[in-house]
Every structure is written in structure tokens, then in C-alpha cells.
Image (spheres, rainbow, N blue to C red):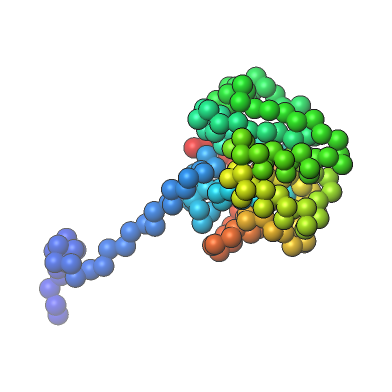
Length: 207
């Protein structure tokens, strides 16, 4: 019977393979949510691309999801545009989360002009990110926003009803939010990587 050999001896002799936890990719556009960044191929939002966020109803946490990004961009002296949100954001709450409201532009566009206004903001090159809530956006309209994001080197975010999930989308990233009491995020599409099988909890605070 062989004598027992201490594990430390085998490790020192490099006779046992020592696994390492995979490193979380460090993206240029982190979401501010560690668990989400860890599963996204770019380590955050896809650069100069369209991200589509699908909702069961407005106000389930989509703005809370975005606040770390808005804070990071505005603190870097970059401008963001908010196009026709369905409800008035809590400015005091945004400031408390670190958003520099001097660099946030609210665009009040009519329903027919939301897509046009969003595209112009993206193409301008003056916005680091543009958030919009279009009610009617077909595949062609979304492709125009994707092209505009590339042209202006901006982050584009559109918030839509999750009934559109069954439709194909040119967005580089598609997320679906679930409502409380168990707010969580499903990654439905992520260009350049595999779609995670599990949902990601959306905690009350940023990590």
C-alpha cells in the first residue's frame, strides 16, 4: 500500500493541476453591476452599439439599472440624452446616485418623433449615451439606431415591451427585466458570447 503524500508536496512539485477561477473581463463600458458585467462578452455594455431592454411594464427598475452608467459618464464630463421617458425621473434621486444633472439633456419628442430624435442625438457625436422609449420601432428603425450609435460612437439604449422578444432584433445586446418582488435580469442575446442560462439578480444597491 502506497504511503500518503502531503498535497503541498504534490503542488510544490507541480504534479497536481491547480485550477483558477476565470477572471471577469474588464470592459470599457461597465454596467456598474458586477454580476452582469461578469457574464457579458465585453465585460459591460457593447461599445458604440444598440442595447435593447425589454420590460413587462414601465418602472420595474430599468432606470435603476442605468444609474451607475449615467453617473460614470456624467462624472467624466460626458453628456447623455434621455428621449421621451414615460415618467418624470426623480432628479434628486439621480443626484444622490452620483449623476451630474448638468450633463443630462431631456428631449421631449412626440411619439412620431422619438426615433428621429434618438437617431439625431446618437449621430451628433456629442452624446456618450442616449436612452429612448419608442412605442413603435420595427427592425429597420432599430438598424438605423445601431448605425447611428456606430457613427456617433455612443451607447444606445431602447426600452420596449417584452412582447417584442419573439421578434428578431439587430441590437448587440438584449436584456429582459423581471418585476419585483424578485427583480432580475435575463440576458436574451449578447453578440460575441453565449447567452447565460440563469437570470442575474438585480439587487437594491450597486456593487
